[in-house]
Length: 128
Image (cartoon, rainbow, N blue to C red; front, side):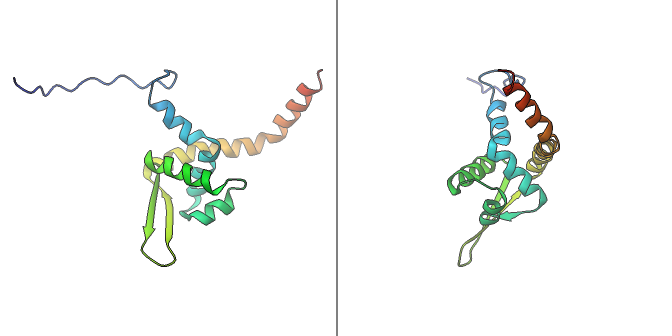
């Protein structure tokens, strides 16, 4: 039987579809820690300890899991140096830089509008 060279058509990605793989990509880059890691790496490559200091409140475990997920998805490059003590640097890949610019813009927007949001929350909470 001859082998077919026909390429199977791939469905158009749709983040609203429950089974679309793009949904998990979106989850990783917009997660609580994903946004902050990407934004921190947009400024410069960093070591694990630097990221932990920059990103207040993140546990070592959550930072490691977030970096691993972002590395697996191709957003973060991990470079281990064969020195003592061990040194690992994290930086953005090209696609990671693109994603980081987008989520960093969202983070900066939230900083600029936090006073408006807090005022709206207070107004809403006082309606009772």
